[in-house]
Image (cartoon, rainbow, N blue to C red):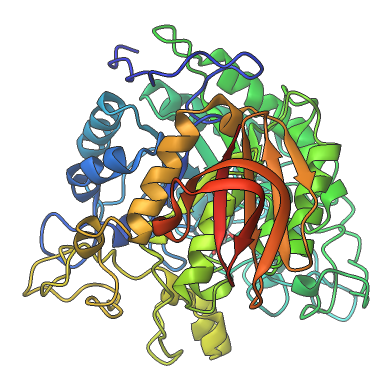
Length: 549
Ligand code: GLC
């Protein structure tokens, strides 16, 4: 591959952990339909992302993950892929993607795509063939089973979007599995042919300069071969599971998934870019809610995923005890070569400013300070850098298939997929003044990039300065995490020998004892540079990074 070398940061090489864009940098999730619209059709596109790379470079991110970019009927907004080797025409062309990858590399930014291996669209040619008869060549590419004796579904598995996970195909008399929409049939990962087809898909994109994949539904691609019933959910299960009737024990997270991950890791390692030694990375949507289920996705730390999204952390409250316990568990349990990853927002869970911070910007700033100072790669979601909240939207007009199915506005994922507010002008700097954006804006005057760039005290500058501090300081990238004593409601930790972080996640003022040095960056920027002699007082929802000394 002959792409330009990325700019290397100036800081001294990191001795404990190899300096790398994905371990030492900060990654950023872009929802392509909502980032920037270059052609005035109200839908964001790849050229739009390229035109906004200056923002990402200024912010200091080292990689972006693009939500699905492949052709799709958009029943589930790209997570229903109809062709794994092409670009969705709404978003542009293959040339646009190549140009984005090259332009990003020139700015030291790598591009990750979203890979959807659990299911395809029902309009994918493989499924069209599979429907043509029980003996169709691609029949076994999907999961089929005969009806139960009463003619009902083969077992009790439920769809993540509600209802049975099985759909009867009357012409052939069998049920097929679809763990999301019935138009998203699950692939059969016991079939070697499926594995080979995906090996080729990975190689195709790696050779084009794609720096890795975020892997959708990574934990659930392999299902129990015997299709055993899932057990009922119990009161001891994680609260995110309790709305379900059954716990995904046989329908997800089977041990055999690790064979596939090791296979993909081999494919990635074999595609290392000869020019700069860059190996593509695998980032899993590992939606499991117990630490002892999450950690195995790293394998030995060298042979499975590079990063396994931590949904325990995503679904924790912005609470000192809850978050500290999860981080301590990761620190104690991860193999030495593995690397944590933390995030607060995404296109499913919602935006951290609303979820964690109840639309209170002080709380959002405290959360961002934590994300950007933990030991592990932070993933920001577009808009996090300006503390963008969810945009309240009703279920009747929802474009999200989940809200359309349930009619429940709290299921509506559109609220966190709204266009990026770049300015407060009509069109928000996202699209033209005349165009109707595919989803509505929130309050453009309250949150936009341009206004925050003009304000050094803004969340945007806080995020940028935290990223710069992190990238320029080995302690904040590779340095060990050590929990420090902190009063109730607060969380304090040391990073390496040189830095401590203290955050007050409560409504009462606190004093964190035992710190000496000076405030490097505080959520209240007026405190930057303040000397710290023995104790740091923090007001409600205030946090600070302290340079020890
Ligand atoms: C993942 C995606 C989500 C999608 C689902 C089905 O959870 O993040 O957006 O709806 O998979 O593909």
